[in-house]
Every structure is written in C-alpha cells, then in structure tokens.
Amino acid sequence: MLNVLVTGATGFVGQHLIEYLKLDGYNIKAISRKLIPSVDTVICDFLKDDIPDDALKGIDIVFHLAGYAHDLKSESGIEQTYQKINVDITSKLLLLSVKNNVKKFIFVSSVKAGGVSRQGKCATEKSLSEPDGVYGKTKREAELKVLEAGRKFDIHVSILRPALIYGPKVKGNLQLMMQGIKKGWFPPLPEIGNRRSMIHVDDIVRALLFLSNNKKSNGEVFIATDGRVYSSRNIYEIMCHVLDKNIPNWSVPRLLFNAIARLSSGFKYKIDKLLGDECYSSKKLQSLGFKAQKQLRQMNETDF
Image (cartoon, rainbow, N blue to C red; front, side, top):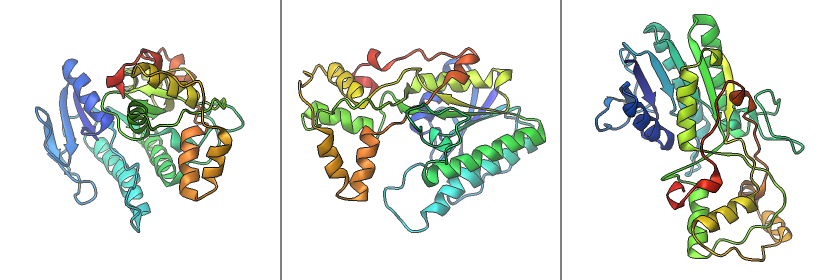
C-alpha cells in the first residue's frame, strides 16, 4: 500500500482527506502542530520550526493542503506570514520530495490564484486576471514553484484550485449565513443574477485522489466546482429549504446594499463577498473524467 504524507491535516479539507485515506487503506503520515490520533504525526509548526529532513522518507505521495488564508488580527508584517506559509513552505516540501524520491506531489491552491471572473464569464485555468489579493498572489507564486519542480525534477505534480467549499463543520461565511437564517436575522437576499461556484468537501477529496491516480493530470492546474452556478438568492433559498424555513416573498433591495457598501471599505468588501460574482469553470477537470457527486440542492443541515 502507498505511503502518503498530508499537510494541513487538521484543517477542514484535511480532516476529510485523512478519513478517506484511512478507508482506502493508505499508510498515512501528517505534518501538524499537534498530534493527530491514529496518524503518524510529525510535530512541526511551519511558522516556527524547520521541517525535519527525514519527514518525507519513504513517502510516495504528498498532499500539500496547508496554507495561510485569513488574517483576523490585521497584524503588521502579515504579508511575510503569507509568503512563509504559502510559498516558502511549499518550496521546502518540494525540495524534500525530490530528495526523498517522492513520486507525486498534489498541491491544493485556490481559485484566488487565478483571479476573479470578468465580464460575466466564468474564469478558467487560462484566465489572465491578476491573482486576488495577497493570498491569491502567494498561492500563484507557489503554483509556479510546483510546476517548475515538476518540469525540472521529473516528479508528477498536480494543482487543484477549489471553488467555495461547503460540507459538515464548515466555518466562515456559509456557516454564518446558515446560523443567521436559522435564528431569523439574516436578510432575504435580492435576485440580482450574480453567479457563484461551489463544491462539497467530499468532492474535493475525491478530486485530490483522482489527480493522484491520473497520469494526464501531471503538470496541470485544475479548477474544481460541482459543475453548477448559483446566485446568492439561490443559495439563500436552498438554505431556507434545508432548515425548513419559509422563504420570504420579499427581499432587501439591492440599492440598500449599495448604500451600505458606500459607508466604508470594510462594508464594501463584505457586500461584494455576499453579492458579487465568483464563477469558475471546472470543464478541464471534467474532461479527464471527474464528475462531482454532490449538489447544493441535495444537502441537509449537517452539510453547513
């Protein structure tokens, strides 16, 4: 059985990946800041510690999920943190992979690395938009290092850019929206025809395993979605249905959201996240034979 190493194993996607790998009988090792039950764990804090040279000894496949995505403290020097975690650690893992004859390196990037959708079109892997923010820029830089290592050292490398991920115990805006609808304070969103892409965490894990077993994925970047497009109003109505809540026959006018957005850059950012376009195409991944199995409309309350 193959030996795999997972970084970011305690994160949202990482926890689900570990469970899938256990079911499939892989020998699992993880690099983590804390011990993971029933998993061979290398204790290492990427911000403070060097990765041990023997951490990848005997490993066949690396699933590199660890990354720095959000700063809630707005500390000074935060760009250096993005650089160290998203770029420098990736480079170090690539060097250790080559040194230890790792066969495959599967990197989880982000759709932010390719920039946002433009002019009503869903972004593809070939879209030429600038990466979105410092997170997107550092993820894009890491992607380039992964692809370069694949060419230079003849190691199988594949990159996955997930759209917005949902699933059991998800945190962030989706969880906040669900809780707001459940408690009755979240405003009924207007139908403005915006377009958003999503994917269930189980399908992200399936995509990662798919890439690790597909020779045609070598040296390529793939966007992962469930193949459907949702408006913010669609998502709101689906969540109401999941929670068995009546869907209001009214909505907050878009003009009111626009007025709130003009109050500050912080409000504008939140309104853009709520009502903006984040549409991506996963046709390239589908062309290899991968198809997402779960759709937002099929979900229940435990999936948020």
